[in-house]
Length: 480
Image (spheres, rainbow, N blue to C red):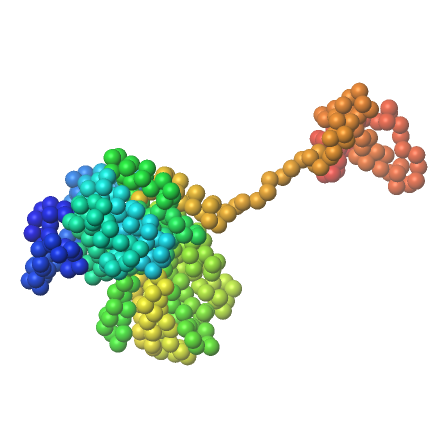
C-alpha cells in the first residue's frame, strides 16, 4: 500500500479508477503493487478477526493444541479446553468493537429511483457531519436523481470524499472500507456477500424491504444508529459462509463464497435427480429427489425452510441438509457439524445431469462424474447487531412464529346484564367461585345406577357435594 493510513481519503493511489479527476492517476503497475500488497491480508480469516489479534493469538493456541499435544492431554484438560473455547466464542459475540471509521461503502439498488434519493441523503449526511469518504455505486455517477454535481456545489468536501465503487474494486481491495451500509431488503445483503468473495467489512443493514431477517435497523432512525456506531462502537455477529468448489473432469473450475445455500436440483429434466452425498470422503446417502439443499444457519430461513428444514440460530456452527421432495419419506432434514467436508456428486448411473446454484446465482451444470465440495468458509460475514435477541425478534416479526390467539374465558361472550346477574349474590345468582349446579348425581356411583334404572335420584341433602378433585377421581374410578 502507498500509505499505512488505511481507508483514508488521502490515499489517492489506491482509489478506484472511477474516482474524481482530482485523484492521482493510477497506472497498471501501481494497481498491481497495491493488490500484491494485500496478499498477506487476504490470508487472515476475516476483517473482524484481525481486530481481535491483540486480544487472542489464535495461531498460537492452534499450535499448542496440535495432534501430538492432544495425545498427552488428560480428560480434565480436554474438558477445560472445550469450556474455554465456548467461553471465548461467547465473549467475542458480546464484545463491542471500536472501529476507526474513515471510509463507508453504501450498497443499494441502483435501478430503484426511490432508493437513489435515500442514498444521496445518506451520503450527504455522512460527508457533512462526519467528514468521511463515502463510496456509492458507480452507476450513480451520471444519475440525474443522484445529482453528484449538485452535491459538490452544496458541500465542497464532496469533491474528494464522494467516490464510486465497482464490483472489481470490492473484490480486489476490500480493506478500503471500514463499514458497509445496505439500503433495501435481505436481497441487498445477499448481494453484498456476493461482492465480497473473501474478506468482508462489517455490514450494517437498514430495513427497506418486505422481509427483514438480516436487516435489523430501521432507516427512519439511521442518524441515531450511525451516531452510536461512530461514538460507541459495534457488536458483531460472525455469520457462517460456505466455500463451494465446482470440479469438472477432475479439475477445480470455480469457487464461490455463499451465505445462504447451495442448491443442486434436476433443472429442466423430467426425471428426479440421482446424487451421492459424501461426508469426509465417506458415503452418507444416495439422494433420489428433486434436489438437495445445503444451507448455512443464515440460509435456514430461506429455501431450506420452505422445503421443510429446521430453523437454525446463526450462532450454531452447523450445515443444514434438506432434500427437495425426496422419493422416500424417511429422508428427513438433518444438521451436520461445520467441521465436515461435504461432497455432492453425480454418479455414473444417473439418468440426467444436475444443476447447481449458489445463493440463487450462477447456475452450473454438473454432468456424470462432476461434483461440488462444500465446507465452512474461513471468511465469515460480519453483521452489526442491534441487540442480543435480533434473531428471535426477526423470526417472530417476519414469520409470525408461534403466534396464535390466546384462550379466553367464556364469560367474555355474555352481555353486561347477564354477566352482572350471574355474578351478583343478591340477584339470584351465585358468586364466581361457587358452584351453581348440582352435579353430584353424575359423579356418585349410587346416583348413576339410579338414573340408569329410571329411579328417582337421591336428595341433594343426603349426598356428598361433588368437588373438582372428586370429579377427577370419579372419571378414573378412584372415588370408591
